[in-house]
Image (cartoon, rainbow, N blue to C red):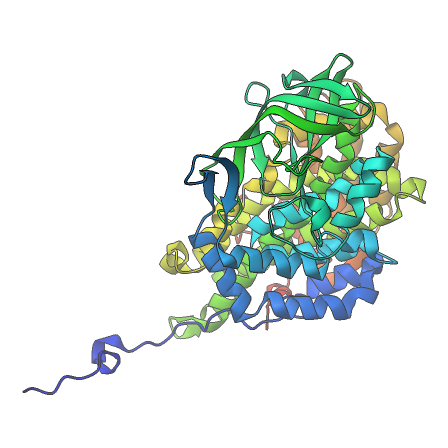
Length: 550
């Protein structure tokens, strides 16, 4: 009988020139931009906690959880085998492990429980969690953001706020009063109106006190296994905000019916759904007819998470590209040492650090808004500007990072396809580009002090870079009669976003990053339309060494 050689010993199966897995890497300690942004925005006291969480997020075990949670997507169980209505979603155990990891670390509760820099802490935690899996960040973000809206109804807040601030995860489907902690979501969009929530047709009928019954549909309800949802419905007074729990006070299931789960492009670990209310029990939150005003505080906070989440997605893509290029050779050199690849990686690093710097400056404004009028005014306008601009930059970064891997980046066994599929989401969630651009105009019109605060912030960076100075000076054209309108709102948002990124980098980044960004993005004679095509002066090697996850 002929001798058979083990498959691993075949000459044609020798494995070489392949990077090791990107795992067991501390995602906090190896990210200089994140460490700096956290510290410069007064979150230095949280460094030890973030370091521990970063190590956990970068571990091989947690990386595998993400793979499993996305491969084994949620499944809807409408009925049990006897025909009883369930309206439940089954998740893979890896999803629950990820939820426990993030919520127990304080992704949702940290902002409200920390003694200082709570929103900076929250932003750093969700930035790290997002690099593990963007899907689970959705219910974590909503649970975080619901607190300001709940406070419009003190009795409701008294009952529910401790549950969302518990810094724990309890996946059991039972009345929230019997659980260790709760998660919360939102359900606003209807199919006939989309972003025009004043076109909503869901109705609310009063049944006594602040209690109502709701009838209607919601076209998007993410994370339908949350314990309760803020939603909008119409009363005689107009659009009103309500809290709808999954269970009624008598311990029976609420008339909250999941019609189907969405088959989404990305974030497949998380369930998004279409739901209907068939006499669902609800409690009013805020004044009748003032539902948009009530829920907008929640939306403002989830928009912060869109900004930070996009910066996180950029970092995840960049780290993967850096890791691959640092271990893979071609034409007798490591890819990272090839001049063309170095320019691409440096350009992506500039984009990523600029997004991170602005995201965390915004988080600091959320921390200071309650006691500082400037921070409150800055937050109101800078949030939609950053939401518009940074979220739109994420898909381009993800694509270019995927291309850095060559064909390997297109294969589902790696992480780049998942990172790429997720990349457009934040630009769509909580208001797509046109909606956000119009929100910017409304903020300026209704609260002119917000524009003054943003311009003051930008002006503080004058004198640091000639290209930034020219860009700031050119902003004056927007304030001439007729210049700023609905048709030009996107261009204005882009100009303001770039200026705010430059100002944020001037405060937090080393000179080679700040000047590199200003030279690459604001020099009219050397602007490029693709990453890596920069002809402006940048120190590519220094930029790469700062961004590289060594």
